[in-house]
Length: 243
Image (tube, rainbow, N blue to C red; front, side):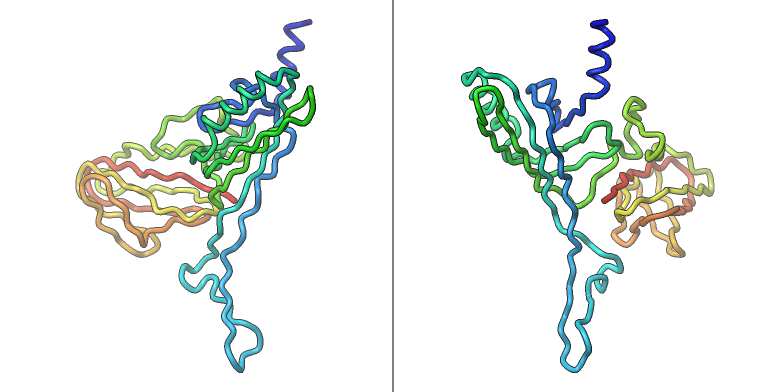
């Protein structure tokens, strides 16, 4: 019975990981509320005399909307009546997290957030202590693994995850690679064993030996078809992002 209870508690426990730390396992903190935040569109409007309404220049430079940083807020509960222990734990949280830029993973999400951490601690009464962690985070959340990193199948989500294995691809003349893109626009990093070319949306780019990027080669949402020509090995480093 005791084994079944512990397994059940482990299954229902929602943990938050910040950097290399499990908030529950390392600090004894249980999440009470989570507000991931919503990224605000970086809108640009210009008033033009004689025109009805403002001119919307939001997409004028990029052709797609961009977003501002947003704030994630997570509150935790630490139950312990020992004030000395709480003071030590609060100091530990400040030393390890406060002011640092770190990754944040919520539960079993296939993505991570990244931003600057702020820690606020408060003793509510003799038994309960509250912790609020704020994260000034990037507008997008990122896939846990990039296309050239080893896959961790224990964390893979078969409903929302995309299997990306774009490392050490053999090009013998011509190779077509389809990259399913998410909402975030990404400039991939290419690493070639020999010089070759890649074509995307009707434009051909020269890829030198070694690592390179082309600022104009921006992969968007949906299927992105890349056609490589040459002879050698190529790796495409891509990490998808979602709002």
